[in-house]
Amino acid sequence: MYKVLLVDDERIILEGISQIIKWEDLGTKLIGKARNGIEGCEFIRREQPDIVICDIKMPGMNGLELVEMMSKEFPSIKFIILSGFNDFNYAKQAMAFGVQHYLLKPCNEKSIADALSKVIEDLNRDAKRAEFLIETKSRLDQVQPLVKKQLLKEFISSKQENNRGIYFYEKLLRMNFQEEYIRLIMFRIEGEFHYEHMFVIENLGEDLFSKSILSTSIGDNVLFLVNEQEFNHLQLKIEQLRDHFYEIYRMDMTVAISEYDCIARVRNLYLEALECLNHRFYLGEGSIITKNDIHKDQYMVNNYEYDGQSLSMFIKSGNLEKVEAEITCFFHDLTERRFPINVVRAHVMQVFLAIIQNSDSIKIQSYIDKMSKLIEMDTIQQMEEFFLSAAKEITQVHYDRHKSNHSVIIQKIIDLVEQNVANTDLSLKWVANKVYMNADYLGKLFKQEMGQKFSSYVTQMRVNKAIEQIHQMEEVKVFEIAEMIGFGDNPQYFSQVFKKLTGYSPTDYKKAN
Image 1 (cartoon, rainbow, N blue to C red):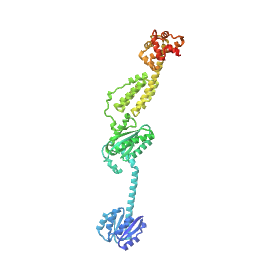
Image 2 (image 1 turned 90 degrees about the vertical axis):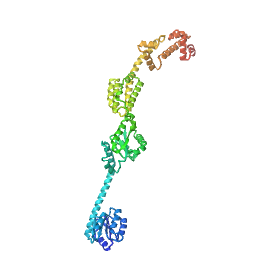
Image 3 (image 1 turned 60 degrees about the vertical axis):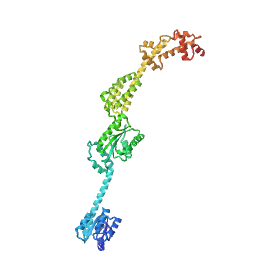
Image 4 (image 1 turned 135 degrees about the vertical axis):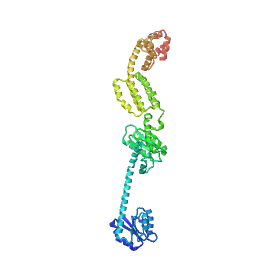
């Protein structure tokens, strides 16, 4: 029920109206009566009625003064003015204060009831309007985060650089975009992830960037618009967010940061951040990339050639060390030149096709099947790791094959040494001629296989044969032993070599053993 206050200096009118009106039937309750404007003001401030019926002519403070004062303090109160003066000026003044019902005395029950009914309709309408506004505001508060997210998407998708639509959203969201210089921060989770992970970043970011203007997610990226003035304080926090996310999920997160500009050019900032993000291809996943990290002075694509022939040669020779060094150099060169990513992929695929030709037919097909995986890799580091892994596999096959062939050759050499240990012409060149190989290459192959030089091996074999002869002799005959094991007529040199390897002269060795 609506509360009603009566204000009139004539007791008869005051009591009469209070008794003749059926207040409850009208949905009202009479809560008080005042004899003048001053009493009425005090009562209104104390009880705050919904409706006030007051006379114009009263001592101390008249009705118009009461309406003027109280309508400023309590604008929701509805006034009904009673007056015995049929003067338009009073009505005109009353309407200036918002009074819509002005009744002339004497008033009957019906006219007062009709005026009350109309006031009650106004109050009901105001209440519904207020309820609607509260409900609308509540709904707006609930959807405001979604509106902000959608708004940022609209700003980014719009190719027109103007302020159309910005004013509407400023009023709707009670924000001021025009005075802001902003940066766009883009987060990208690397590897396979779920919506949960993006949701975590959005929530962590909203706490971190408490003064962010807008945020949303587009595709696999989470975006935040932040005030340029706040940005310098946020760089350390960006690193902390990235590191904290890695600690929780063990997932890398790359961050791209645009330059600063006005809100109307946010699409350009978005494209700029995307360009930075694409350079994680060179800088690696988990990086924080700004425009300063992007090299614009790129080499001309036509000036670069690499056919992979030297790499194929190292693979065929089974030289893993050379293969690793060549691949490292190849990818380092691509990284330094900063070619467009599609050009890098083309070069990598060309060389990859060249190296897998060194594999057998069955393996080649398996490598070709893996090429789609190589093309789709997000960073040049991933491509290099994949590339190196395949090259190592092929190189190892060639190495094992060469090693098997080498073992047969080395065994032939060992047999020749065994059979010709007494031959004074026994040397690396002599053996190389016997097996029809280059002496230098054979020497390297022998050392690689046996772990020592050919000359050292022959010397050791001759000393071993000498020890066998010493054990069989009653008396050591140095000259005979030297001749038997290939030292010819130089027993003194034989004794020196023997002592160097055993620590004894031949005669002393016999005595010691």
